[in-house]
Image (cartoon, rainbow, N blue to C red; front, side, top):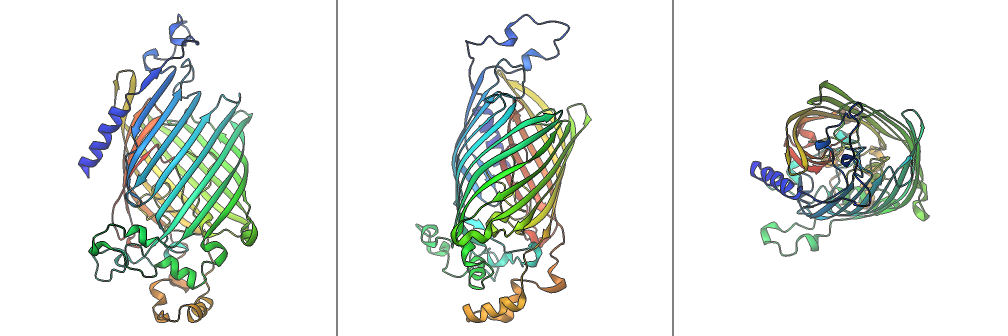
Length: 476
């Protein structure tokens, strides 16, 4: 694994040596005679004009596997007057993973296309042939690692805790200043989910006999048969949404933040059509991020506290798994568990209509250096993540047993406790905890390669195994 991470860092360094194209129609500020009394910036550390970087989209996520593809990021720093902020950013990515998860995405970000407003547009298609499904309410659903891992005697199938999920998303978000550090936010978009059983014919294609996955019911199929997943949500749906809220932002910069606070409060109305109309719902999100400089720009203490609640209507399980954001930075923000919320905990381990989580970390800058005109630094981040259910799904034992008797008569109902825990033993509100260490490589204070190693504190969240995530950007 160490060799793998070293290879990623080398690819980043080679690819990060970007092609620059200075806009000759705009004289750069660095070319003007500086005014000594106002000159506060180190001109050699300021990027100007356009930078274009194209890289192999190489990453690793313990939940999704090894990722391969290509990505490109175009930045316009203009005359450098707002560096490390940029005037415009265009991002393109096309990639696939060894666990059959795809990324096809185009994103645009600017604070200057519409003067005085930040605009971000995202269009993504995210197929996932082996999407994690661990049931509802965190610890109330039993996670049996042996059923999904060959090394155990009770192995059933590697796809036991999987389903197929394809997500199509388009989103546009904008903000504007109210006064001081306060901003209003608005957005609209469309989320389209197609969900079903794992396509075993595709997964088993060209596999050796010993690696072929058996055609058996996984947890998703059992939830469908037991009517825990209602027929009008089991296969997904289309949901246009409207979003609005307010933000307080005193951060010194968007990426590699070293001081300041960011607080967000917003509501998202998700609409639904036809048979899915009962899943019209209103969600509330709040988050607070705080960055405290400990020693100059070399040590920063950073933490985030956030919650997502369903305040009206019903939330289908797949929308409960989608963590709403005002501005989409990473490819997808899935619910509690995984590299975007609780590192070290299985992706989608905690599915519920309402939850809260926190991330706490120290950010150390170990060293900084230049390659040509590009500025780099290497950082180290020890962290702890925590999350818990606030609004659980109601699982009625009597109703579930009745549904099993009617729809799944071959299932031994005495084994239901191996799947779902009822009563006081369910521990629905017990916190999920994990911790670990992150390694960061940043270029020009914007382009970040992140490698996080994390382990859960409770084996019921991942059998005690450590997870590694290689992603772009800071987690928050």
